[in-house]
Length: 127
Ligand SMILES: [Zn+2]
Ligand SMILES: [Zn+2]
Image (spheres, rainbow, N blue to C red):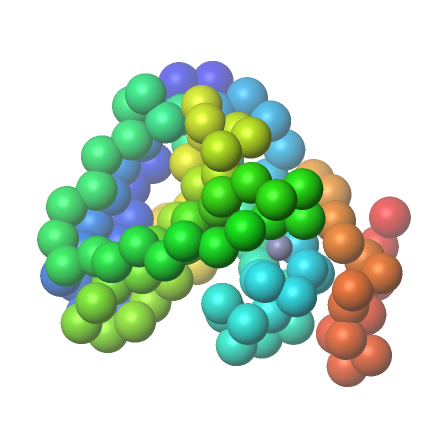
């Protein structure tokens, strides 16, 4: 697929675009995603890093993943909307939060990961 997807933050100060990448759209229940979204999980869409552009007032926060490698979360520095996740291990991908897409109906989750970390009030329902 070579669809170009666009999106941005709540206040409109930060926008991005990129081509949909090969790979599943997914729901992640890990603790990082809980804390970064303030909810029970994130909903992520993979875009090709080579085609990805982002402009505006974003900031990027660096964390360490389970294997000790760096991973990054970017968000609008004006309104705080979470926008992207990147990692050292998956450098060819930029994952965007599904609801930040201009057309969130394009998100069709194919799998759920870190099910064991799900909060009891947000248990995975499907496969
Ligand atoms: Zn904003
Ligand atoms: Zn996660």
